[in-house]
Amino acid sequence: MTMLFTRLILFRKEVVQLWKAFWAPETPFHLKAATLFVAFYLVNPFDILPDFIPLLGWVDDIVLVPLMVSWIVSRLPVPAKVYAGKYGPTVDGTARRK
Picture 1 (tube, one colour):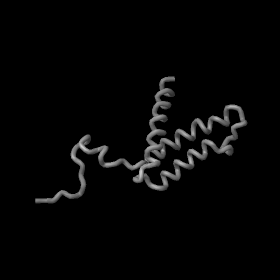
Picture 2: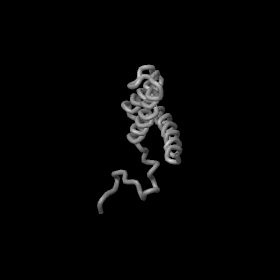
Picture 3: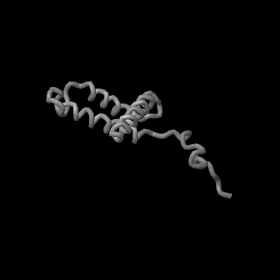
Picture 4: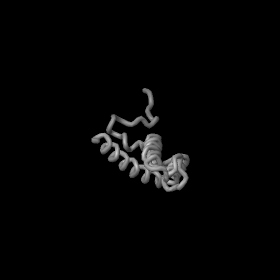
């Protein structure tokens, strides 16, 4: 039960992150298109398993949508500012040998 609750909290954070990334200009077009596809899949009446089948119709939404959201979030570009100072100095390619 606690694992399900933890996954729900993580899913909420991923959805917020995906929303912010959708409006960010740094996000590649293919990830924005994938985000739109997930939203369309969620509201689309045509599913892999139709919703009128008791319980099984919701299972594909409950399983596939979080998987797709996690997949997209894992491929989002990370700005260099996030890592600056946290893991040591950021290498920007301007170092010179003496």
